[in-house]
Image (cartoon, rainbow, N blue to C red):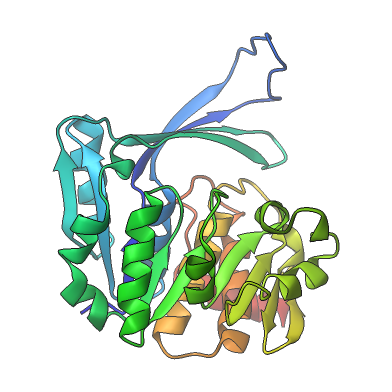
Amino acid sequence: MAGVFVVGSINQDFVLKVERRPGPGETVTGAELSLFPGGKGANQAVAAARLGAEVAMLGRVGEDPFGGELIENLRDNRIDTSRVETVPDAPTGSAFITVTPDGENAIVVSPGANRRFGPDEVEAVSGDLREARVLLAQLEVGLDAVETAARIVAGNGGRFLLNLAPPREVTEELLRLADPIVVNEHEAAFLLGEDARDPEESAGKLLDPGPPSAVVTLGAAGAILAVGGSTRHFPAPEVEAVDTTGAGDAFVGALAAKLAEGAPLEESVPYAVLAGAVAVTREGAQGSLPTPEDVEKLNSERS
């Protein structure tokens, strides 16, 4: 069975390169459109697979031209798609992404078929979940599906990695099961509100609801790990950013892959930082995801 089992979203990404984003009521012309496979679940599954993990995925696509192509793309990336099904009454999930010349992005997501599975579909694959080393989930799918999967994996001694993206209200039970919970600074602020001031302080406060560990990603500044009452900052190497779209998913997928190998968080987080740094130097979400050789090369250049 897979080392990493992903319960997550599968999207078609529509990426628009723009000189600047329009203001309210404004039209900006001259955008350059590209189409890429995406979805946080699929992106993180591909990221983990490219870094050597055995990956299986539970998800849904629509009965449209995009759905079949996205499933085939997952297969091409050595991901077990036997639990990915097509639903006839919903479109495949879509993401509309604007990227400015500095590499920064803004994203609007239409969930579509990603919200068309819940606890029953998760229970149907409970035997597979019990054998997984790491369950990886995000929040572009139904919360009840994520919670059900987390209980099954945690109840069998597996590890649950929760990427709180996009940020949504979740139960304290879900937070307690996460080991680690992974958030960026905006997501940390969503959880902590006024308590989200200093990133290291925020990372520590994320442990208050009960998760054994927490990671706050800081973009070009790296990431902070909080575990066992202490925090540690892992800086990122300096690179030239082209497109930040896939950086977060590269980080989370790399973290899951390392944890599935049995590596400790203190080793897994800096590895994930390197994977995220490689991703920002390339275009697209999945197209930017690194191989082990890419990560090793960047690590060598930094040393």
